[in-house]
Picture 1 (cartoon, rainbow, N blue to C red):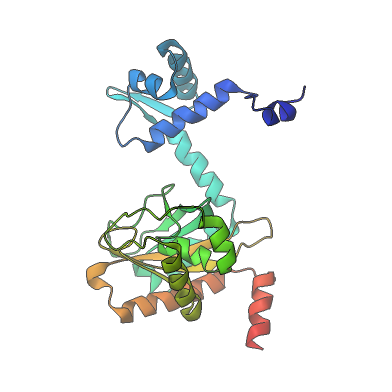
Picture 2 (cartoon, rainbow, N blue to C red; picture 1 turned 135 degrees about the vertical axis):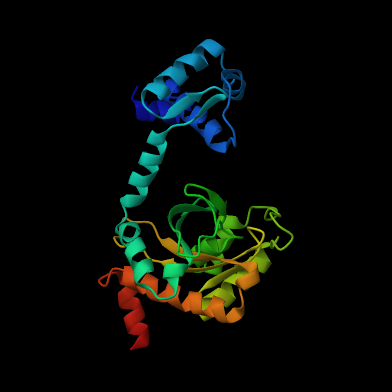
Length: 270
């Protein structure tokens, strides 16, 4: 029987690999190092089996052992950076932000859809030295974050409903979070009309997010979003509009001039 057939039967073709991936997931979700006992309990494995997994992952640089327990290793950061660097637009993103009179001082991030979440791939810190936004590799519900909404605004309402319609409601991350699909559809319609998406403290307290969609450079590339994080105290509408317009310009600079999206935009203007 082939590995593909075994997978269709529900049999795991590589149990040790699956356990290693689960172990890395446990460490990714943890804020502090995890002990061997905690990892074994999380995996439902004996300590001896968990020890063997840890030894192999530590040898590969995927995890580090500290006096307090295990944590993710530097190799995971290298792999995350290599994943993001596969995309032309991520490689060019930093130069485009630095060349923008508006964005060079803003915290700007690149995100993609992963299921129903926005996954953050790259981050331009800007010159304001603000500790805002989401760390690389983190995720927020697409329905609540500006970057996620920028990705959703490129879809029809029917496509958004198919993606999110089974959820009983969106998580209440802050008191400003929207909770229902009809609310989201209204927010997305407004975003389509003005060209950029807005999140007013719905996914992160004290932060207003502004974001625009960025079509993939090649047909095989995923659609991306460019989003800026602004402290709520400094997020007057004039600044939000200025950042939104600058993000639109940045997305245009990062869009393949021969892509279907660019040809469609030219035809619309014509």
